[in-house]
Length: 221
Image 1 (cartoon, rainbow, N blue to C red):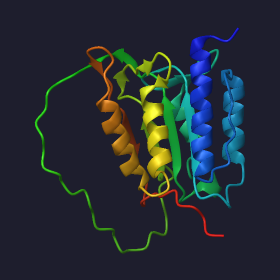
Image 2 (cartoon, rainbow, N blue to C red; image 1 turned 30 degrees about the vertical axis):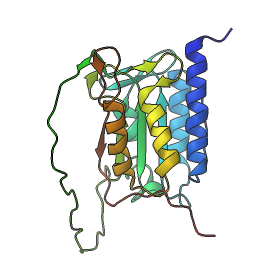
Image 3 (tube, helix red, strand yellow; image 1 turned 90 degrees about the vertical axis):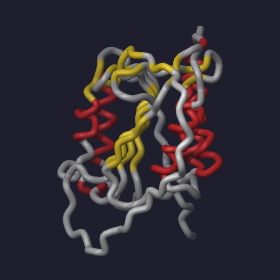
Image 4 (cartoon, one colour; image 1 turned 180 degrees about the vertical axis):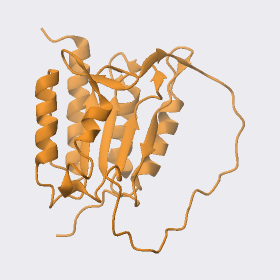
């Protein structure tokens, strides 16, 4: 018999799968892997030839703590996962975006609601350096996306599941092929921040080591 929580996770996986397929990704879903098999799958992905790929995305829907995500039987250090895809390890993804999305708690602190003041809209445009880049750091072009800030707990709807995945899937559907991806993530941050779990709140975050703007535009035939 499948629990309600497993049904919710299955629904979220299917939704995520569908949204990324719509954006032109080839998707390989895995469910409830133990640590050994999970790391084997990740190593296989890192060793694959990504010459014809423009981008790599890896998504975890699991439980977690500050610097780890949980497999079925053990926890895995997130740095151990991303190290496999560094430029000195995964040559065919050098210069290409490597996106890791984590739907997992990062602690047990719960965030409180506060009343803020409206701020004038500020421009975040920056001028790009016109100089050509001939070499890149091995850790370049990673984008780490978390459903919640480090040390904090994440929330979910009892029937619809994760706040973060719900809102990310919605924005991917509406603007995934038109909006620059870090701008899309900022919009997801806003949507999740407006939700409530009783008196508590949730604040997603992302860390970008990207070296250029990222759009998921359809490829020309």
